[in-house]
Length: 230
Image (cartoon, rainbow, N blue to C red; front, side, top):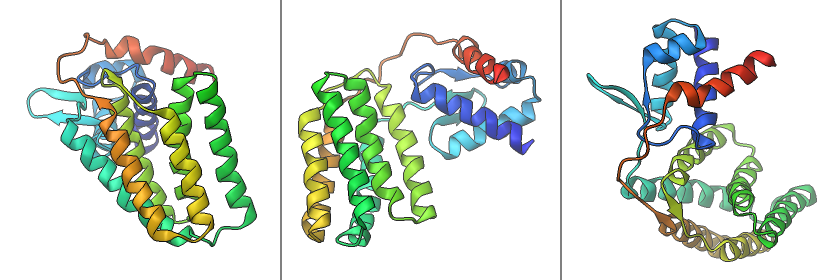
C-alpha cells in the first residue's frame, strides 16, 4: 500500500504545482481509486499524506479538496521559511567552499537570464529554486525536508489568481544575499531574508472567490498515462 499511495501523492503534488489541479478542486476517493486502479484505502492514505503537507484539506462528510490557503496562511508559510533560512544563513555564512558559492552564483545568473528574457514563469521557478539550493548546501536532511514541504505549499499560493512580483528586485536580493554570506555578515543576511520573504508574500493577490470547476480525473489522466508509458 505504501508504495502506491506514495506514487499517487507525488502525482497529485505535481499536478497542483503545475496548476492542473487548482485550489478548491474536489478529490473524490472513488474517482482516484478508479483512475489509479487501486483501493480507496490506498487513495485515502495518499490524501492523508497530502493533507499533512498542507496541499489537501479533508472535510468531514464532504471529502478531500485541494487546499485554498488564506492570506494569513501565506504570511505564516513565509514566516516559517524565513526562520529556517535565517538559521541556514548563520550556518553557511563564510563557511562554504568555492564550489558552493559558485553554485549559488550560477543559479542567480540563470534567474537573471530568465528575467531578461521576460520569462516570468521560469524566473519564478528559479527564484524558489535559489532558496532550495541555499538550504541544500546546509547538508541537514531534516531542515531540507521541512523546507521542501513549505516550498510545496507555496505552489498553492501561485495558483491563486495572480501576483505582482518585482523580479528584478527579488533577483537583486539573491545577489546581495550571496555577497553577505560570503563576507560572513550574518545579521545583515538574516535581515535581508526577512525583508525578501515579506516582499514576496505582499506580491500575492489573493482571491477567495470560487475557481472554475476542475475535473480531477481529466486533470490527472495525462499524468497517469505518462507514468504508464514510462
